[in-house]
Amino acid sequence: MKFFVDTADVDAIRDLAELGVVDGVTTNPSLILKAGRDITEVTREICEIVDGPVSAEVVALDAPAMIEEGRKLARIAPNIAIKLPLTWDGLKACKALASEGYMINVTLCFSANQALLAAKAGASFISPFIGRLDDINLDGCELIQDIRTIYDNYGFETEILAASIRSVNHVTEVARIGADVMTAPPDVIRKLASHPLTDKGLDAFLKDWEKTGQKIL
Ligand code: E4P
Image (cartoon, rainbow, N blue to C red):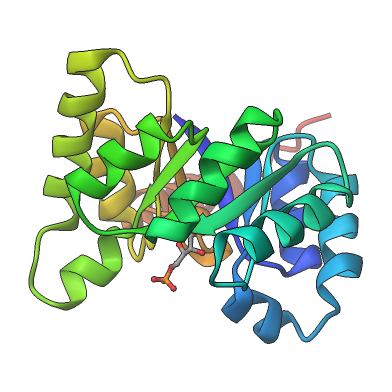
C-alpha cells in the first residue's frame, strides 16, 4: 500500500520523506489555509520534495472552469494530480482532463456508486473519506471494501485512495481490505511506529546494558 501524506506543511513532508515513507501528498483548500501559504508556491515546493503524485484541488464548480483551473494547477509540476470533487461537473472535468493525459484524483467520495462513476470517467485515484463517514455513524471501511470488490469485479484500474484517515487502526483496516493508497496526516503516520511494549522493552534493555558497564566500540 502506498503512503500519501495529507498536509501542505512542507517541514512535516520533508521529515517523513527522509524516512522514505512518502509516496505522494494530498492537499485540499482547508490544508492550504492551515499552511498559510500561497497555493502555487507551496505546491511547487512540495513537488520538489516528493516525486510521486501531489494532489492539488480545484475550487471552481462548473466543468469548464474546473478544467481551466486543473490545467493551471498541472502546470506547477509534472507530478501534479488534479483533485476534482465528486459532482456531476467534477466527473465531466475528470473525463476531459483524463483524456488530455492528466492524473486525476476524484475527491469527496462517500458511496460505491460515486466511485463507480469516477472510475468510468477515467480517474487515476478515487478518494473515499472514511473518517467523515465514521463521524456520522456510518462505516467508512465498509465503503473501502465495497469499492475494492466492485473495482476488482470489472478490472477498473482507478486506485483506491483511502482518505480522511483519523487513526492508526484505520490504516491497518484499509491495508487489510486492500486499498491501493492511504493518505493520512503526519501525526497518524508517525504514530504507526509507536507501541507501548516497544518503549517498555527498550527501557529494560537500556537499564540492563548500563549494568554491564560495556560500550559498543
Ligand atoms: C484527502 O484527500 C483529504 O484531504 C483528507 O483526507 C480529508 O481528511 P479530513 O476528513 O480529516 O479533513
